[in-house]
Length: 191
Image (cartoon, rainbow, N blue to C red; front, side, top):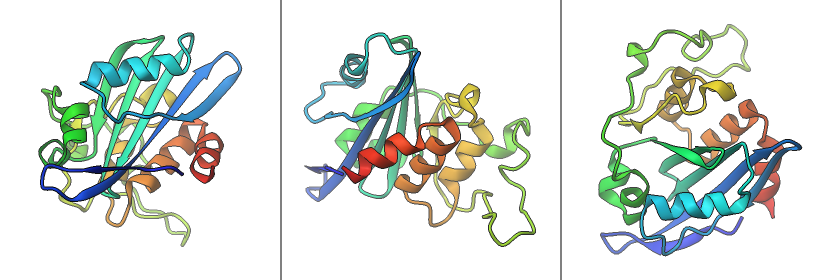
């Protein structure tokens, strides 16, 4: 993984990793996306489009400083949708402001959602199934439904982002497994 090192507004060095995942008629492909120097969220979206202009679905997972996650989605190059794991990302970094600064509506609280994924907050008696109920103080923003049609309902995404001890890389890995592009992202991370 070639994480980009940047300086945040407070002068601290932070790293980020941006994985673009695109799906065409043959399946998923992953590539690292350089978003350094992007002017705004539309510039980032244009860079995502350039990965594969013919892609049916384009996703971008941006992990910042082992703390924040932003997810972008384009359908056939249009209809930009974004989600952020925590509104604090906007205030604490230029990257967060760039990706999520235009988001006007907050993400829904898991308790406000229809239970379209009964496993998202339920516990299992087996030792292998983790508790997914949100327990952190994260304040997600944006569209938590952006991956629902790909197998990750809003309740599941919010629960993963709010789960104590989950790093952005962990959330990305689990979401990508559910979407069907886990192997591609894992190979990209190991490159």
